[in-house]
Image (cartoon, rainbow, N blue to C red; front, side):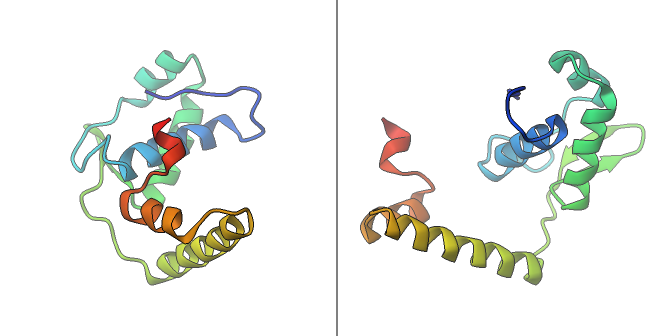
Length: 124
């Protein structure tokens, strides 16, 4: 399910893209799953189909989904290991870890987040 926040400064297409990206990364959507058609999702969310198409185009460029002409959009089963993207994500992680340490999050909690993908706050 995709939820939009119209008060958020992020554009609607970016919110849709990030929501779908999160669903793919977290395993809610799995490789081979068919995404709703552009028209169907636009109707569901009451927004312009071009907005959905833009989100889908960006997800395809990033390798999260594939578009099959005449059949639709599917979660990709061929995630490439882009070394540049991996390094960028590692740098982001390092900065985030340092900021969390500064804010008082313990190494034990950080390790738990990295191993399980959730923090104690996620379960409360």
